[in-house]
Length: 151
Image (tube, rainbow, N blue to C red; front, side, top):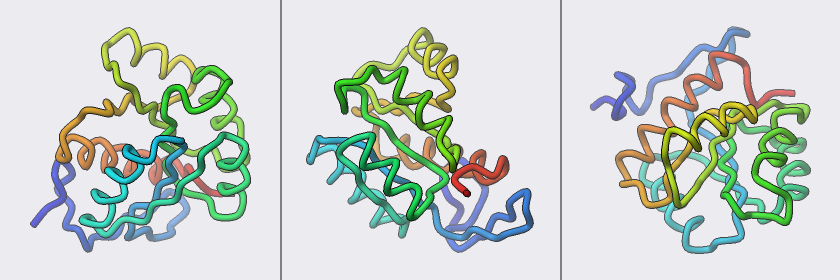
């Protein structure tokens, strides 16, 4: 069986630009929303992915320094800061993760703004399980290809 949208088997490894192999999708979620985190945790468990959680941007930065992940999902409205400044701050961090903005709204204007603030994509919070899996798989492959999530 292939991973949806990637052509890869679940047990496939991906060789990064540094020659290292990654076989397990790993990501960090920045959200104070327990329901959203639990939904992502269920999806991650079903796909045998590794998920970490931070409830604030400051906590996420500490977590990412200790245990870098190639992907970060930042929930819009997670902090007093604007999501735009949060995406730029994550992009400028030591590990340069690939950042997706989780939002209740998803349109081309928001996507342009996310990309303009060094984000990768918009992850609609209401997306189906399959769409979330596909979105994270593509982001993960991109992040590994470009060496994101490393010190």
